[in-house]
Length: 425
Image (cartoon, rainbow, N blue to C red; front, side):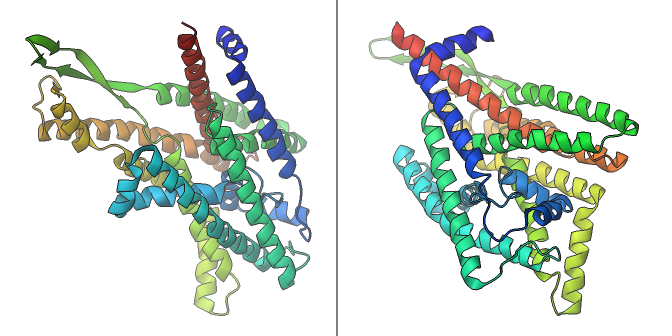
């Protein structure tokens, strides 16, 4: 490990990229502590601590929303815009064609994603401010129209600024920029969470501390193991005669299928789906219509229940793992490409039987992968609900994101180092 770190640091481009990413993260954390005027931060913190679903929104934004800084929304609107275009690629044939159009098509999709981020930022900022205005904690000290418009414009500009920083990080090829910004927000919240826990700790909680630490270690080991797990499907290529009797082919290789192809995307989808009913209910909690007000309060109470929240979270992660894998993995196309190249899976006929076989294999892999992601996501919440402990240091979702981002960044750095070594020869 240390040899890899030293070799990576010796490569000038990699070293400059790492230093640049570090500087951007420091800049991000500085902007995350620039509060907006007219906000009671103490009341805001209590409001988010009293609602675990909104606490997930703070995680999704990289921890910036709990301080309501100039970058309060984080990169959440950009991620939402990216998800929208991924879903549209399944529904709209024209967008699907553009996505398949190589680098030029990807540039167009990226540009549309940036443009969609602006109205989504405005909408999310307005929704958040409206929710804070309806709160009984008097979070907003100023509610005049000019101040509200200024807040929305500032938060939207902050989101676009973070989007720009994230793309600059991605260009350095040492990790995904948006993921690294969320990663920085999660790590920055650790000292505050640890100090808050230590301030309220008593000796009766020692068992839950041990359980929570054990879950954290199991999560780290499990995520690394499962993230690297691959099912190799054997593939044989038939011999072909080319040119003047030259034989080619006849190579035995394999088709690697990752155990969890979707990565952390199901977690992000699940968080978004859990946030929508809570945010909508906050709008109607003070409605004049009695039944509407009661329905909104019922939704908020239900989502505050640890067991209901955990079951919903697990189910959504499980379902979205299957859904997103179906978006990115197409057995029909893989079977078609194998047949065109003269390849086949031993014991399986080319064409439709190969497609069906690959579909069965990926469904079996998804069964374990989806269950693993769901369990990792909800185990800390279930332990906290069972013991009544206020362990808020870091949850399973946070660990999952942190470990996945680190693995992705390490792989990109290793690829950069390997490429430079080949160039040297």
